[in-house]
Length: 470
Image 1 (cartoon, one colour):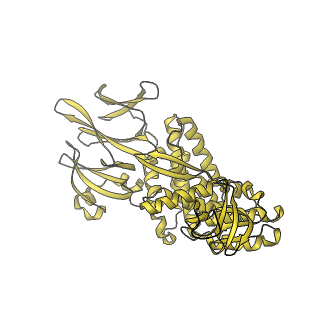
Image 2 (cartoon, rainbow, N blue to C red; image 1 turned 180 degrees about the horizontal axis):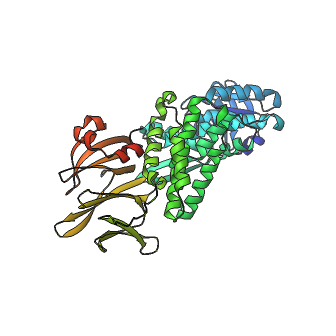
Image 3 (cartoon, rainbow, N blue to C red; image 1 turned 90 degrees about the vertical axis):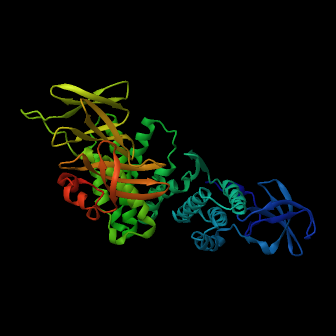
C-alpha cells in the first residue's frame, strides 16, 4: 500500500462519519459539492467558525466541512504513538475498516522509518481482509452503498481488491500487499501466522489460473505455511495453520498425481496435519475450516496406498489404466483375460482403491476429477454386459466432497458408501445403504452406528483408513 496522498498535506483531517457533505460555503444551507465517507483524508487550509476549509485531493474539490465530523491529525513523528493507538482501537471494530486503514496510513506517514515494525501492516491487512469479506456477503441496498464508498476510500490508500466470479457469485479478495510486508519485517510468530493464513487462502485463488501455474502456486502456499514457527503460537492459531496445511498439501498431492508423479509424500503431509489438529481447542468459527480440511484430505487419501502386486492366482476382476487423449486416462475392467468395459477420465483414477465384490459381479473404484472432489465408480455386471455407474458426493450445487466405498452387503445387491460434501455453504456427512443397480440411497444416517446394516457390514479396511470417522 502507499501513503502518497498524505505526503502533500500540510494539515490533515480524517472524516469519521459517513455521508458528510463537502459544502461550497461554511454554512449548512450551502450547496453540497460532494459526499464524503469515513476514512477520506482532507487537506486543511483554514477555519471559518464551526467549519474547516479543506481540499479533497481524491475528488480534486475544495469546500467546507463541519469540524466536529472530522479529526485533525498531526503528521509529525511525535504524534505517531497517538495515531497508532487509534488504529489499534479501530482494527477490530466491524464497519470501521476504512477509518482504521486511514489512521494506519497516517501513522506510516508520521512515524520515523526506523520505528515502523510489522504491526501497522498486520492491522491494515486484517482490516482490508475483513472489508473484502463484507463485500463478498449479501447486504441491504443502503449498506451496499456505504460499502462501495469504503472500497473507494481504501483504494485511495493503495489497498487493492480483486473480484472473482464463481458459480454466479462474486467474491472480493484483498491482494495481500500488507501481509507480504509483514513477512518481510521483523514480525512476531502470530503476525507471521496471520499473514501466512491470509496469503494461502484457497478461496482467493484466481479460478482462471492454468494447471501449471496453479500447481506452482500450491507449492508456494505449502512452503509459506511450513515456514511458520508453530512453537510460539497459541493453540487456536496452531489449529488454523494445521488445517490450512492439510488443505494445501492435499491440493499438492492431487496436482502431483495428475502429472503422474509420486503423491504419497504430499498426501502424508496432509494427513499428518489433519491429525495434528487439537479438537479440544478448536474455535467455533474454525469448524467449517476443519470440515473442509477433512474433506480435502479424504479426497486424496488413496495416494498413500500402493496398488497390490498380482500373485500367480489372478483375481476375478481387476482394473488397469492407460493413456487416452492428451491428459486423459482410460480405466478398463479386466476379467477372464479380456477387457469387459472401460471409461475415461481427465482426473486421477486411484487404482489402489479397487474393491472387488466377493461374487465377482462388481468392482468399486475411487476417481478424482478435480481438486477436492472424488467420485466412486461402480463397475457392475448387468445380465451378460458390464456397466459403469458414477456416484458423486452430491447432486445439488456441490463444492468440495468425496464419495467412497465402505463395504459389500452379503447375499444382496446392496453396498455401503460414505459421503462428505459441502453444498450451498454447509457441510454434510452421511453413511448410506445403496442399491447397486441404481445407486439410489435406501437408508442413511449421519453416524455409522445409527444404521444397523452399515455398522454390521462395514469394510474393516475402510474403517481403518477413512477420514470420515475423524
